[in-house]
Length: 202
Image 1 (cartoon, rainbow, N blue to C red):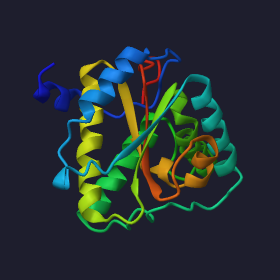
Image 2 (cartoon, rainbow, N blue to C red; image 1 turned 30 degrees about the vertical axis):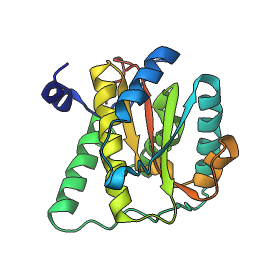
Image 3 (cartoon, helix red, strand yellow; image 1 turned 180 degrees about the vertical axis):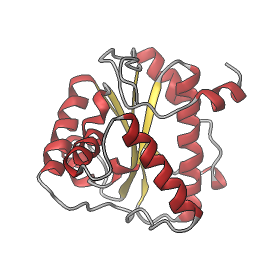
């Protein structure tokens, strides 16, 4: 696939089959994504991949934790408040998503149920958590963004669907219960991925 085609075809998918991606494909995916440029070639990103049953167990833990109303405790702070044209774009995005799910603006229970699907990984059989040292800052976060874009485009070129989720960075303590992550590494986001379930239309 040409790069421009991958850029045009990449989209966020919120419905996955339970088909597992084979190890060879996973290895090729992350090897190719590793070719991202970074400041002084530091390659500050850390990628923690979880597959299959272990992935489902982690998703169950996240879903249970969030559904109980536990407050987020992210390693790097919360999403900023959007204003002006940025707020307009956020509203249009939310309206489009919820309209496709037939959820009314004032239907808070349905909106909460939709939110919680983030923590079920939308049924994906794979998730990768992306982190960097907690002591690092904006320069390194730019590097992480480049690496994440590499991941998403390589996934697209391989026919793998993905959903990058900032929400998966809100509860790192739960993630740490399932993964061996050094204390000095903070989690920025997660990407649910796998093969798209085309019967799910949002």
